[in-house]
Length: 123
Length: 109
Picture (cartoon, rainbow over the protein chains, first blue to last red):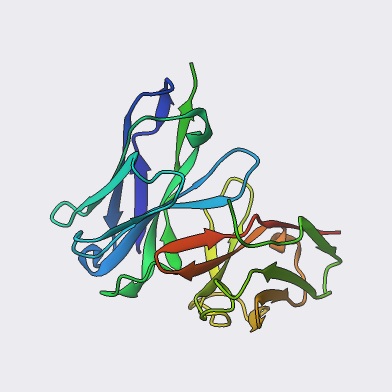
């Protein structure tokens, strides 16, 4: 069974940094686009970032462009999100999600999701 | 900020059908067929229920159907069940950005 498990969330002060991880199992991780999506309290889903199957290309949402960096380790089947210059409006549950399409960098639909990890940015 | 709009809430009785709209523009929904829908129940992860406007992933109930007309996508839930309660989000991808709608809360009365 395909599964994604996020870790690394926690409480961080404004301006601080945090690194999230997502460990995959049960599917060919190396062949799929991987993504981060977040949901802030009382708000809707927001796309954060996507990375191509081999890690050579990445896309970011406007709200995190220049502050967050997505990466992947296809040997250890891990997706990461380095979050710098954190702000209070980055407070959210962060989900790792698998792209539906194989070997095509088209992050349009996500068919497997983790349970999420909570990031709280507060002083 | 989302470029898509959805009604804040929709309600229906068990057995009825409801339709949720997702309105965009010629720059997103009207530009291609990369429209998806997600269901998110309380304290659960989102679940993909429709992709490419009208296709259902394996295992998703046939009670869920999607369509599109010009710049508006729609999700119809037929034969409403209690377990259909939750939030529903549309999404539209136009490279290099993916946008989600603000979400519609479905109540089964």
